[in-house]
Structures are given as C-alpha cells and as structure tokens.
Image (tube, rainbow, N blue to C red):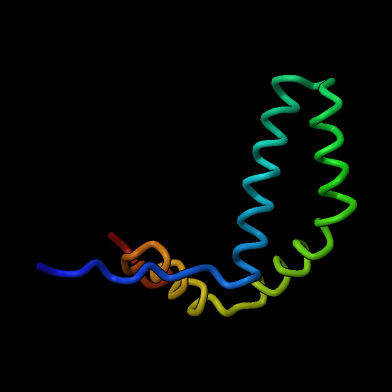
Length: 89
C-alpha cells in the first residue's frame, strides 16, 4: 500500500491572493445577482478598506517571481509537470 504524497501548502502571499480572489469573485457574482444588496456593498467596501493593500503587495511579490519558479510552483501545487515555455503538444 502506498501512502499519498504530502500536499504542498500555500505560502502567505499565495494564500492571501487566493483568498482575496475567491472573495472578490463571490462578491462580483453577488453584485450581478443583487446589485443593490447593501450587505454585499458593505463587504466589498470592507475588503477595499482593510484588505486590498496587503493583497496588492502580495500580488506584487508573486508577480516578481521568475517564470521558471512560477511554473515549478504551479506544478508542485497541481501535482503534475508543466511543459516548458513555448513547448508544443
């Protein structure tokens, strides 16, 4: 019997950006469905006031990573190997 490989965890910047992306997608969908819902507007305002700055800082950190490092990290998180840049099928 084989044991499953350990699932890599997100680093702090990856987690912050991922959580923000999920929240913003959720809020965007909520605004489309209920454009005048004050609760949704309050949540969006709270995010912009309290969380947007650190999320943008984390996004800047992630965007400065070299492509090779990003590809390796994606492969590590996804559990498979990506083709090299410019590779063909």
